[in-house]
Length: 360
Image (tube, rainbow, N blue to C red; front, side):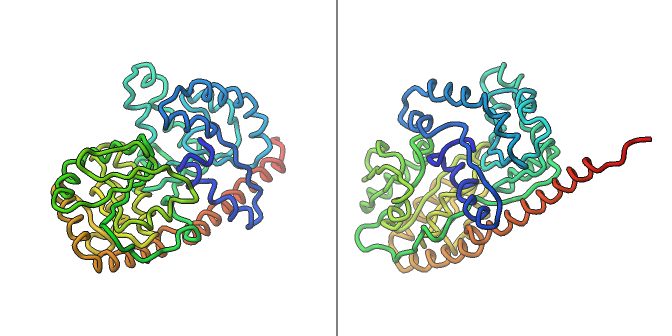
């Protein structure tokens, strides 16, 4: 994995499947490249050089560890910021899966550094073409992987373990809106700050910001709280609706809409920018609303604020949609079947190579 369990992508794309795969008889070992101290430093704005250097020092043993496994499941890349030829040298002939939940290739292809663009812009395409399987979280990433020549692609959305999300009725009290994320992504809220202020002037409401405790919007009653895995569901349950504003950029179009799934799993309607995977996850007018322009945010939030019955009805529909499409119980069997078949194919190839008749 790229990160430890503090990293949402690593926790949700790979780690949460490990118990299910283990119960099915697969021997799964998790190895984060960057430990949690790296993300703790990143989110707090502290230097993270020492944490990154420690990760690359640990990577010295990677080749020996890789040889002990039949198949690798790599989140994004094995060695961040290092060129393809070096990563390929560590992998050698070990079969591997690549997993993407963001448009990560843009970090290199659209870097401000000419050196990064020169050395790394084609890295992901080369890795994709060598992968036994590419797993992507949304349609945008599927089209990208296809265009890069990936030979076997599985579209697997980032999903919820419903055992951790027990839906509760909307709470009494003042209208409360939730946003969940990290200090880095909280900047997306700035795009609708004026709309939130205008709504607050009409009638005060609370904006609960989970994961960015220091975030504020002047003129809006913002309560910032720290994120923990144990409290994220109950914090969403304190709210009446969730929001996910995004700009219409290449990076945002590659995002996976996981916030929406979290809100919906707690039976809360979600309002989201009509960008990328959001349009596939949310059903406009049924599980929440899609915002196509700035004024849509005021219109849709006002509709939910003034009609608590609508919140409850949409929330129930949202929960059903997650149960049917975006839960671990739905995606884990698909993943298990795919990996089991892949391991079978790899074993057959090895057996055929071992027992191949000598050339005459």
